Length: 584
Image (cartoon, rainbow, N blue to C red; front, top):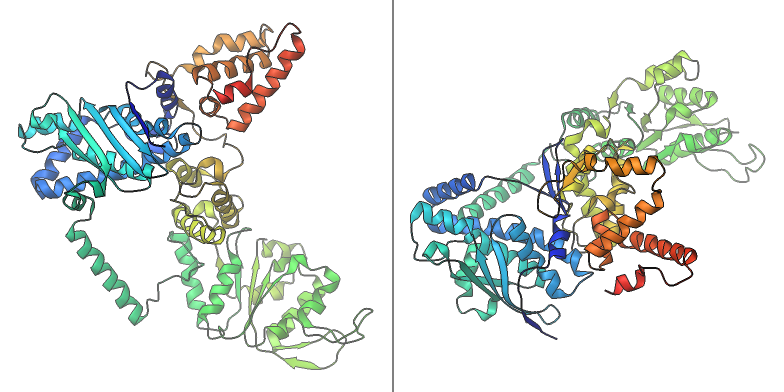
């Protein structure tokens, strides 16, 4: 059913809920709206930039650029509106846009009439804009204009509503302060309902000069492909940091030879991926690549697994079978965690490297093999040699060509590339369409030390892909099980719009009350829960956001509080019923 009503000023609880999403970090100088990074920019400086764009590009091209900039901002804010739509009506969720436009200081947006139905796609809106910075500054620089000039704001309205409705919605400015009106007024409806939609849509298309640059880029890529771009990385090897590039350059140089390679690096840095890349780049790529984790094989079975076994060699050897060396004949054998090889296997491995032949366990016959050996370890083999746990002659044989793969914490520049790669990979595997990572999630990815290296990063991104709703962005909570205690302290806006930077100091009395026994932690929790639900007018999701909880978490705490009150008070029900609060 189509929803139709005249809309007045936004409710205080709804505005407070949005203000609770704004946080300032004094340590890092970052401002956050939910999980998107924001900027607090001087309006005069923004106006000066706008004027320079107009003077440089001309009125028409500047209008297109500014409209597209506003459109991108509106699409981002629509993501926040979608999270609120889960707990409110479509109309109330839509109001997030006008409220954010006001909160962000762009313009005071007051919907006069809104008619929408997301199911059928029907939409009509009339919105009053007051104190438009764009209209005021355009008039200041150029005087009264013959056409509407609030281009960034129109772009925002179109981007926000189109993303919210899932179809193209166009707005027109029918009154504008830049034209001499007291306020601005806009009307929005589906693009096909406007007679001149094509004329308006051209401002959302990239300029022809950008298209030409893209065409030239495409031609360069095709040219490089035709002559063979030797610097192009395989699909599963991603990185741009100096440390990674240096290691990969060594790998490429080894590809043309048959020398044994020793890969060193912490667990999870991608040693097997490097080994596979070496195999694919070499002349052996048409033969087998066999990987063995030496640490996963019991010591008594290592020799039979590597070199093969003849029937009857030991109890249980019922048939003859080749070992991993024979299976890799002509190709590449990758021995991971080679430092865990037992002494007897080390001696036989040295002979294989020196003579190029093996003997199966229980057999006297030697077999010639042609295998390229790639070994890997996260241990210090030189130290193991000093301790007598690894043969020195084997170490020097393996160490002829060593490549050290740096840990992810030393490859910060590669984290965005790897995250994007894993996002695309696991989105395809799980059938998800995601828009990327929120700004706060990107900061968390860069700030986390990644002790498990690339393997841990891949697992975190896959978890984010699974938890993030389709069509949204991956948030911090989707990536990590708990918040990082090392994150800088942030403070938000109080109900009057001021910064609650002194919130720690103002909580001193409360802390003292807990320490001296006047209040218990349960009583403090009860006060916080009841206050949050009251400020949110019974909306549990909104109350949960105020407290930094999820809806199930606050519902559980309210239920526990409710049961505790019933047990303590036999005269009537508890004052707060979570089931009623959830229905409010």
